[in-house]
Image (cartoon, rainbow, N blue to C red; front, side):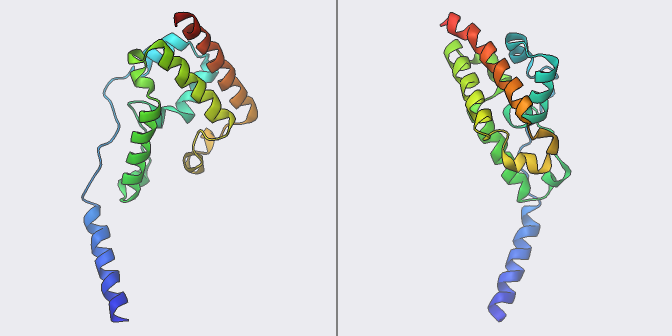
Length: 155
């Protein structure tokens, strides 16, 4: 019983100490952080809204953080998800992608949405508005397929 008490105290102290360690937040001062992407791919108003609701938090230079991001270890978990998301696709870095890479990223977007892999279930648990209906998935995939056509020509 004494060991459990010691382990409990150590865990509590570690939890308190970790609250003072903060990962960097993914927030930019730049208000047009996805302008190049949107200008080039020309999403409709509805598609743009879907991208804002379901994609940009993890795949751009600006994340809207919920209140619980201020509690460790959740803050570390979210920072890792955003970092990983931007490694796979960063809409804010779109201008620096080659035409071949842009085509591939849009192809991956279609696959991930079609397979129900994106947006992540962990994201939709707390962001109910990000859960895509079948009609929204189709709209997003059709737009991405249309946007891909310009990169086939550019290659």
